[in-house]
Amino acid sequence: MGKTKKNLKKGGVRALWMLFRKTVIARKAHHTQVSEMKLAFYAGASAVLNIACEIGDEGYSEEQAVEVLKSLDKETVYFMRKYAEKIKSASK
Image 1 (cartoon, rainbow, N blue to C red):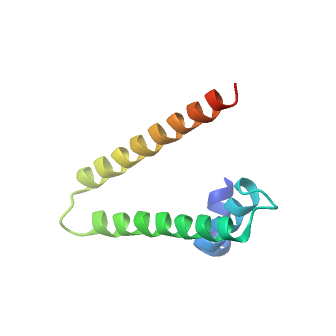
Image 2 (cartoon, helix red, strand yellow):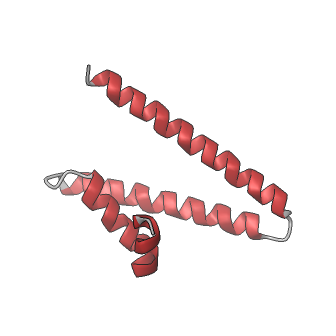
């Protein structure tokens, strides 16, 4: 079982935030940075929940819902690859 699934079972979005905070944000980060990142994290979680609710409505067929999820997956993978490339090139 992955960390995300374990944390969802333990405490939902808050547990995922705590995992993110621990693994991504520097321990000595300024409280303003932590606060802004928390707001962005929860805004992202809210957006995903809204999408899940939207595609769960009767107006979407199962095939349409799957296509929406595939599109979101493609978009996020693309973003993460581009971000990783940017970080890698900046460290040269």
